[in-house]
View (cartoon, rainbow, N blue to C red):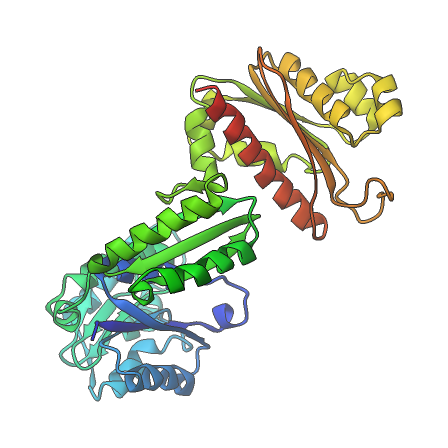
Length: 422
């Protein structure tokens, strides 16, 4: 049986949604890298009974390792260490060396403030030096130390801020207690295939057929997720199941070769960034309100190839800023392929670029017609010296959905156009 772990995320601010949990997903990835199977992630508020209930639940599931995040500060609602000590049947004791370490940290932090009662601050933080008897201390990155409590299960107690938790996790993993807890782990592989232009149901049909056609298919742990109009298929498996995964990928190519755009985990944004090397791109947008330009500027090295963009909603703006003929708009409408192509030509010239992409559409609510309902979006990609690549799609959802899907479609159209030139 594989080594299993559970994660307890504490904090009423996380439970109520005021703060998003970043630690659970990050720790899940780290456990996968170690070959440890994650059984559960639980979230609870800063209440001792609820924290202990989560610990007991995970122990009842037979996990070998429990990781907690949060509740290590100096205030009254920070009580994770106390609860873990009780759960593990260990007395809380004052670690004098740890107290000295925390005091030194506080002295550095308080040096820039005047009129602060340092002894009061030190007394308030003294509880952070109380640790379960026999536990190994993980030196703090902020002011909150972590602890590793050996046992069955072994419990790793880490602070809530990700900037503190992440480096302290690596220290915790190296301890004898954690290494003993995860001995015998399996080194899993995880591979990701990304597809675009395919409904999730289409992948589901292929997976049902694969289950029947591939011997040992059940050795593959597969999850699919539809996000931003892309289908992401993540497969986790032990090394001996590699032939089954290879057979699955072969079947995917037989059925959906055109829709597969990534098998190495790279995202379309990563691929576009590589393909834009040595180019200069400009963007013209209406319904997406500059979201595509913003997405492009977040790519690695974007300052070298993103020339600029124009957001033009009004017809007059399209004419004045992008040189789109008013007669063209009158004849075809602002949301049309001829206008999208004209916007692309206009922004190409305005920024002296060699690559351009334009989007014009109806994101709603309202504004649609029988011929052009809400969700109608026209795209045009123009590379200098080539004919424009222009498409019209009808995208589902509300305004935000349409805008987000439109930027994803635009990135894929840009990727394909750039790939055809290389």
